Amino acid sequence: MPHEIFQIKVTLLGTNPPIWRRLLVRSEITLASLTGVIEPAMGWDGLHLHEFRFGKQLYGPHNPQRSPFEIESQIDEREARLNQVLQRVGSEGVFIYDFGDNWEHGIVLEKRLPVDPEVNYPLCTGGERACPPEDCGGIYGFYDHLENRPEELLEWVGEEWDPEDFSIETVNAVLQRSRRRKRVKS
Image (cartoon, rainbow, N blue to C red; front, side, top):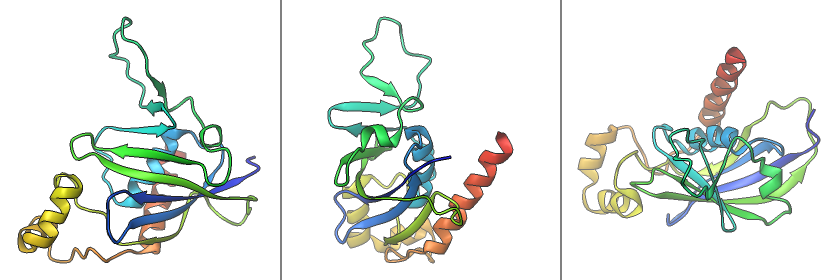
């Protein structure tokens, strides 16, 4: 049984006004499992490569294709836990999603909380604005579409997409479905 919950804030860097989510996760969650929280909470499909950076250390998915002669600079994210890389309130890291678009997310440990047995974790408790669409060219492509070609953007992502839209209920429903899928696989 975990003894602590981390309240983290994940902010898509370079966005103005900021696109962010506040998440409650178990302190001992692996970085691999944290990926499965951050991506759906932000609105990503999870179809692209990713990595974490805490200080100068990189963490990412296990790569069985790596040559034995390569210098391993990246630690397997399945082997690292959040409470090992964020140890005190105010500690920070970066989650990078989609190396082509290079979406960088700042991660900050805001609070350490006791476990509430009535709560199903992970849980989103706050956030603002919709995630940019996948494969739109990163921050610069996103803002170019938003400011200069909004009709093209809406044609691509659908007329109902609103850059100001955010729903805690929707994010938590997605996280709940993800929890159920994990339980079924176990």
